[in-house]
View (cartoon, helix red, strand yellow):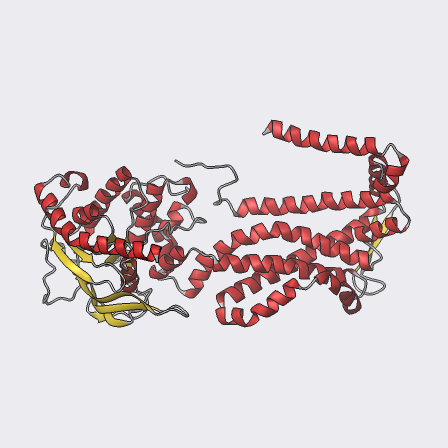
Length: 275
Length: 285
């Protein structure tokens, strides 16, 4: 395991070295940026300048946060959009998945609509959400919810549908009521499917938030990237991408952490501890 | 259940007290869209007396599992009726415990939590549940394994937990669908002996489905042979007058066992051949 870790880190080092070496040539660097400049940019973002962020509705808000560097307001905005959309989207997706899977008639009636809504390229909705919810965070939250919802919905739906029929039959003969079946069979079974979908969902929540910012905003990492692109500042674009990636990994790690706490019954990958 | 042992082969009809489980002239048809209805079983009558151990054997695809689903109340017969202690069955059979062939432990519950799930459904007090669960785990030889999850247990151990789960509810009728078929021969004989010991102590009615004639004879008071499907029905019924308590490994060598085996097999063989011919025809058709 230690060797594998070492290998992982040396792969990263090798890629950075390659990037650095290739971009010695200024013509290449114009398109790909320079790693050292990129990291210096990230460092500046996190250390220099100051930022302020108004919290609350309306022009004045409730209060203004004063932050120690210029990136923080952007980061806080993007992360808030992501987390809010993730939580709401996952909750709605779970509820809808359970409902449609457990009420087969409703499921059949709504099925074509769900399919249509899912196959629609939902990024197109961003401008509509902007006119509905304005250019603040809520239009981005709405867009990200539409992305998160379906991933979670389909997984929970599948999780309920694929409950082991043997477990179901034996529970029914043991006298489980509908509510008891829900609590002891359907929910735990759907939970493992839910968790595997949450990893995808975190990524999509980020996509929704950033694409939303990209299409119209005054704050956020997506806004920073857009600004950099507007001035052919490739280094700024890459710096934004790296910051996003790191925070996406952090959020994914948090999902994994919660998953490990609640899914102790599931054999870990590679663990086959039989007696 | 009375403490007196039911005499061997006491399945004689016309007893005053009602059978624990009676299937009366039942038929079960399955309709599939665009296909003619498939008749799984037709005109089957069988009764299991309280305290009696009855096995049903038959070729593959003869509707053995359908029979158990009918007895458990998971399926409703297309014709005929199912009676439990003399009254017709509506919905799930609350007096039955059902041990299925497949692995039915909940992977998200520990062995102890799996053992007590039925007790939880009944809404018993928590302390009583835990105490009874531990008692039953000990009875199936798994004391100290209560905290393990199913994936940490061997196939035999999982079957024991499933057995404890079924028996913890103290059902008056125990339905078993080839419960040991996935186990290796040694584990299987161990489990069969343990099942007999547990049954001997409590004497519930058992309806045991198997395709293994040796197993059926070694365990049962009575063996019923089903015909090949579709529309399978009972073609033979044999009282097993071997002395109890039995050891399933030793008893196979006794002359009476060999004699019974020969007689039942001559009845079963024709059905197996018929079923085999049907499958071949279906494969080539």
